[in-house]
Length: 173
Image 1 (tube, rainbow, N blue to C red):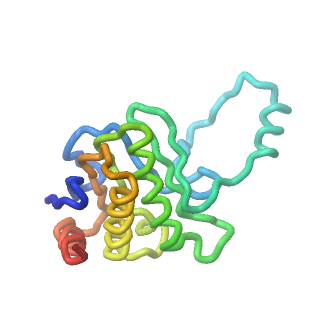
Image 2: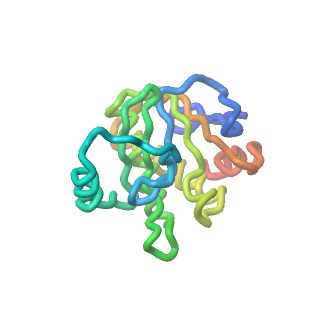
């Protein structure tokens, strides 16, 4: 199931069923970048006081921002949750993060990206509303940048029916 927006082919598939190879993957994050952190215990060669000092001095990321970790594939950490706020996720943060994701694709020359429905799984953003924010952010990125290197976007769905998501995307166009 696919559609195109602003020259980008959008494919909807389950998160565990890749339709193509990717060079970037987006993760839904909170301001402390804890949501996508592995559960493994990390051993550090640094002195425990240094580790504690680094933790003490840590600053939260801004909601709506994106932090890129080199890959392959590159990891784009989309900050759409502030666990100290109610609600923890807003449409404005999701839209800002989506735009930043697409700008990061330009900066890091990413051509194929896996993107979950931000704010839909851990927040209360309806999937159809996410699709509207996606279309608007993608179009804005293309309008401001002229073109994007991004050619394929894999929308990694959960239990949402893929055909309904594409229909919602098409209805917005």
